[in-house]
View 1 (cartoon, rainbow over the protein chains, first blue to last red):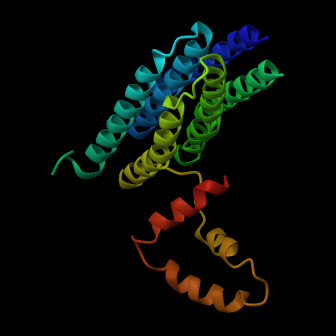
View 2: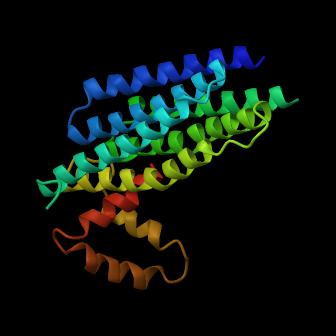
Length: 89
Length: 144
């Protein structure tokens, strides 16, 4: 039962990745693309957590934590660049 | 029983993540599009991480705390990044589907009897040119 639900959840999260990638390609301006990248790394964290349960290995958590850190820093840097024209002033 | 609970949590989290990205595709406006990924972060990935924490705590016989770290980090950083994206898009003055300032006044004066006084003062506020646009968009967008 857990294996089947993990398969269904992986399909749903993969569809979410595809949709946010569509917004990344399509998005009419830069903040939409930043929002799509933000959603994309969150969906990647979800996929990594699901794979960690499915393969029963605890190695994926460090990758998920690193992706969370770097994704947040990337979002903040892009928004800061849009706001101020510079990242570190 | 535990397996049923875990699969319920996993399916709920994956469905909420899917709904968040569906909102990212389907909604009309950036200020409304900000909602979907935020809910996907807090609720969807939160459910998945709780399921993972319960799974690894029950199989490995010692409590795993990595997931709580990721959950805490995501819960702290998701409002910050959403706020920064909204601020950047207001700075670029992106088009919004919320336009009317008087609807903003009607929303604020939902207490009945003091309607006339607040409407007078708020129409005075509306004449100000550039500054009030920022709080209007931000207060308007969560209600769409």
